[in-house]
Length: 284
Image (cartoon, rainbow, N blue to C red; front, side, top):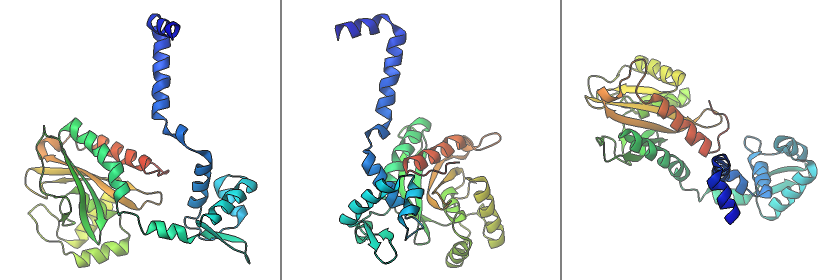
């Protein structure tokens, strides 16, 4: 120990390499994974959109050899997570998966992943951040994060909803719904004139939604309240469906940039970080 301390004091390069190695080990949580558990979860995930599979199909999907796949399947069968049809030899998800799914707290994982990332942005940029989801055909605020050094934007309380033609996040959430769902929501939620800056014509609003979906973000200027603007970006799952919206609100002069909204890059990176934390593979 004394020798090591002496070398590190007298050799800055050794100290730097050791520090980087320690940081890498600390940040690399994959090193803590139990291989057998990772393999078992990969088998369970292989049933997404494929409710019944043969052993060969599971093996090919997961990249595991058939012997390993079979042993893990037997264990999962014994634990109630997998069942097998003896007549067709196909495997499917067991009743225990359904039992556990019924106990999932809605949006809990999304909030636990996204809020720390939004907290970082709020502290760094002194703005108000919002986490939102589509819930029962409404744009629902899951959380609002504010840095005490900046101006707090109060217009969207936690648990509150906003009209779809007002603000950034509601439009982002709606733009990424299936076309038939968009039409159903527009029929259910008429486009009211919240203020003079909002779009109330359905045809024009549909075009605005197309633009949001194409560019991947929305910058809403003065359409919630005069002098306030919001940047909103979607967090998408592997098939392109929206999981949640991340948005930032502040005074309009502080949000307008030259060729793009201020802090847009930071918002897009935040969305990518949430995707990675949720384990979504197809990052843009």
